[in-house]
Image 1: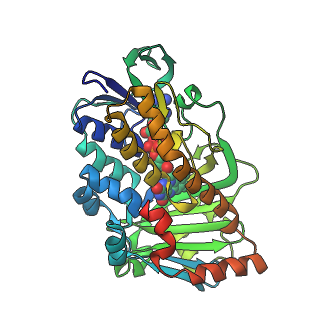
Image 2: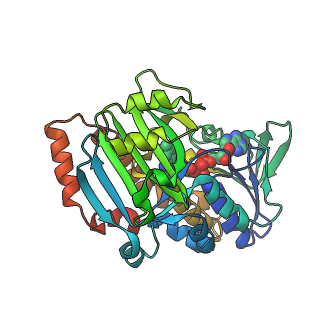
Image 3: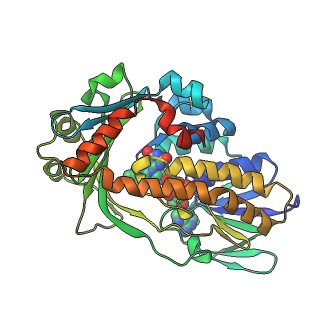
Length: 381
Ligand SMILES: Cc1cc2nc3c(=O)[nH]c(=O)nc-3n(C[C@H](O)[C@H](O)[C@H](O)COP(=O)(O)OP(=O)(O)OC[C@H]3O[C@@H](n4cnc5c(N)ncnc54)[C@H](O)[C@@H]3O)c2cc1C
């Protein structure tokens, strides 16, 4: 890449911010276009496994993330009605020792704020949605919603599952998964055991599951996933807590207690896309959810987005010509992201089994996995 080459990154989510930090730090001219006028309004809790956490450390964000987030001591899974423990996989110090990073729990807005702190001034252009790109022989033109245009030598689409940039690489549309998720925050007092044992709690039941965990001192985040035959719009604000509790009728009292404590609940349809066989075309590449949007059941979307950023930054500064650098990135990321994408989809079935023989087999398998060894493929990256 020549010293004068200019990179445009579209979307200031986790992936776009991480890439812009890495490129700017290496002296690459990089502009980050974000459609929102301000960051932080969208999203809720994020679990960041050590494979993503290591990239945050590489970015120099460790002290910021440790201050704002929480390091999980364990991931615990329980049965939906009687709360019977199905598994507890200790994380904490064992995780840091084995994978050189903790398992972080943090609010998405706080994670974004940590990354923005590391971005040099002038790189981020808020309120600038990109509508499309036009590839020319030796550069790319960006068309913006405000009527403006911009040019760059290479453009990276980091604009999420409903990406506008994806059309420059792949022709497809987001796929509604048949599930939607209710997400909200509650005061830490709703789960008193988190004070001594901050951890991720999963509860599995027929057609539904719920996850909750502390995201900061004093705050717990929950995601309650339910089968949704009707299909919902991508986001519905201000859901009535009564409707949410009705979805979890008969569930364990701790689950119902957490849900009842929420005052602002948002409902999202869960979308992914079939995996593409390419992440780039000439001078345009996709990363994060724009490249490989996955269902959230392995809690890996942001982790994979961070892995993308590190590989893509290395490829772009490797000295190879720009289209060649993008192909290298694609080659290095396709197999890994395909595996995580596929494993995430599989869990749409296994997490939501009706009580019966298959559910009992799943629970026996969960029970047999009590240490970090079975996560080596994922956390080791
Ligand atoms: C219910 C749920 C729970 C999840 N839990 C986890 C978890 O625990 N752990 C985990 O790792 N991942 C989790 N994820 C996934 C994770 O949130 C995403 O994978 C991750 O945020 C992807 O980051 P990104 O930067 O690729 O995209 P995004 O975070 O979606 O960011 C895209 C950015 O692009 C901007 N943008 C969009 N269009 C344009 C445009 N045309 N022009 C300019 N800007 C644009 C958007 O405003 C946004 O800022 C979860 C997802 C869901 C739905």
